[in-house]
Length: 163
Image (cartoon, rainbow, N blue to C red; front, side):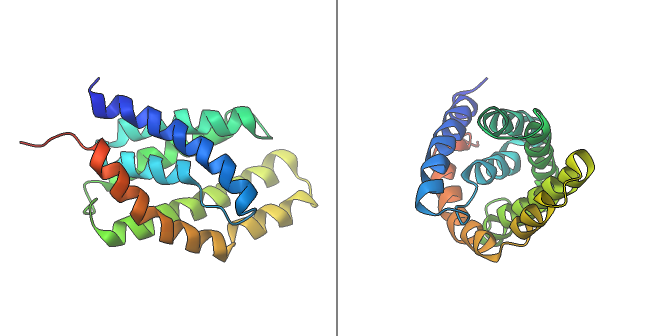
């Protein structure tokens, strides 16, 4: 495993810590830094590495979160895999990709959380809160604003030197 891939796991852990701090500063509006990192590494390193890093990021959310264990690992892993497959279809270094992909991934993640909440828990009181989160415009805006800066930061450390 090369040095940039080892650093990816380090940055995901740092993003997890930063994300927890942001939850206090921007409650219900904080961008998911973990998701931005998973999307970036999926786009830059490919589907398999995006999937593995997504599992790693989802593990933190599962362990320190509430709900069925393993769901967030599956969701983040799937989003890393999808980002890796999209690598061949889009230009990963473009600004438009850095803005749209993490915001769309967040929206997809929120919809997946809403669907699984309805399937596994079937609680009417919980479903509207999750649905509101899925349609949270401020979070989508924060994701779109913050992600190009994080992509730029990670680009300096993450990509292997190309010949």
